[in-house]
Length: 107
Image 1 (spheres, rainbow, N blue to C red):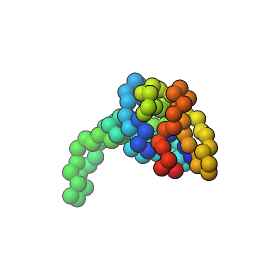
Image 2: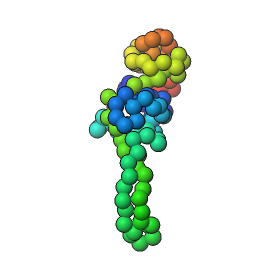
Image 3: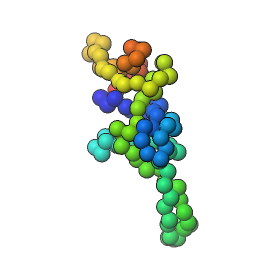
Image 4: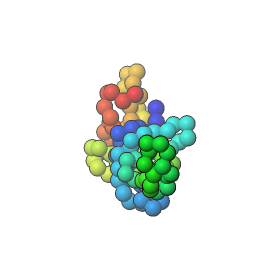
């Protein structure tokens, strides 16, 4: 189980979008990267190819998972994540308010 999963709200710590918040759109576990919709956007120049129109596109690139920190949905503060066992389930919890993040349906 990862500390940060799809759908979590995070704040960016480093880079050109420092201080901005967003919701995780995709997690690339093999590369240790995440994609946040509308953040870490770069321009890409594309030629016309067949039906695809050429021009300048805005692409949202994945960023390293170490450059973000989780925002707790309960206390609305930036926090670290801990794990605890409830029966046979491993749950994430906020280190500041000690409440479970994600509930029972977290994988």
